Length: 312
Ligand code: NAP
Image (cartoon, rainbow, N blue to C red):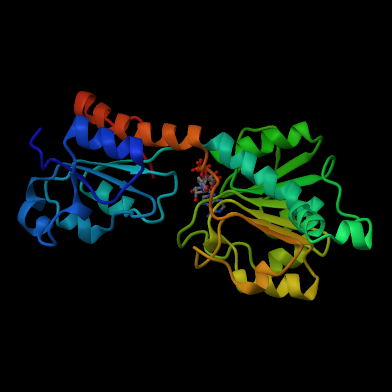
C-alpha cells in the first residue's frame, strides 16, 4: 500500500495510533498541512476515524477512491453511513467489545442514583454524618421493574444484569425480539410500568427526544431515568423541568445534550448522578476497541471485508 492510502482523521488512542502508523502507514491528517486533502485525497482508499471525529459526506466526496472506513466507537450518529453505502464503501465500528463496560456503568449509575451514593459521599466528606447524623432514606433497587429503551447489544447486557437483581425486565424498540423479556410497543406505557428506565439506543434524528416530557411524567416521581445511549435521546429541558417539579425521582446520566459539561440545573441536584461519557472508558475495553479499529482494516485488506460492518 502506498503511504497515503490510509488516512487517519483524528487521534484515536495510543495503541491504535501506533499500529495504524507503524503497520499500515497511516497519514495523520491533523499533523499535515491544511491543503493535504486537496493534494492527496484522490489517493486515499482507507480511512480511520472515531465516533467523536466522525466522517461526513463532504469528507467522503474529497476521497473518490475510498473503499472502507474503520471507526472507533459503536455510535454512528457522526458517520454518514448512507452516503458511504451509496458508494459501496464499507463502514466498520467497534461493537460487542464494550457491551460489558457500558452495561456495568449503567448499573453503577442506576444504583448510585437510587441509593444516592454520590450525595452520601459528599455528606460524609462535608462532616455532615458526624454533625447532623444519619443520611435520609433512599430507594430500593433489587426486585423492581427495569425498562430498557433499545434492546441491542448493550441493552441486552443491561437486561441480563437485571436478572441478577431479581428484576422484571421489559423493553421498547422499533420491533419485538425473540428474548425472554416483555416488549412494550409504547415508550409511555413502558415508562409507566418501570421503576427504572434505561436509555440504551443510539442518537440521530430517529431517536431525538424519544424520552419526552410525557415519558418522564409516566416514569413518575419515584421513577429513575438512566441514560448511557446518547444525550439527544432525552429532552433535556423536559428532564430538568421534571426534576425541578419533583415529578421525576432522579436520574443517572453518562451522556448529555451539549456535552462536554453539564447544566448547573442538573449539577446541583442530589438526586442526579452524572459521569463524563465514560461508558466504555476502562483500560481493557478501550484497548480492545482500538485493536478492533486496526483489525477491521487488516481484514479488509486481506479479505475485502471488515470484521464488524455497520449494516443499515
Ligand atoms: P445496537 O446493538 O445497534 O442497539 C441499538 C438499539 O437501539 C437496537 O436494539 C434498536 O432496537 C434500538 N433503536 C434504534 N432505533 C430506535 C428507535 N427509533 N426507537 C427505539 N429503539 C431504537 O447498539 P449498541 O452496541 O447496543 O449501542 C447502543 C448505543 O449506545 C450506541 O448507538 C451509542 O449511542 C451508545 N453507546 C454509549 C456509550 C457510552 O459511553 N455511554 C458507549 C457505547 C455506546 P430495534 O432494532 O428494536 O429498534
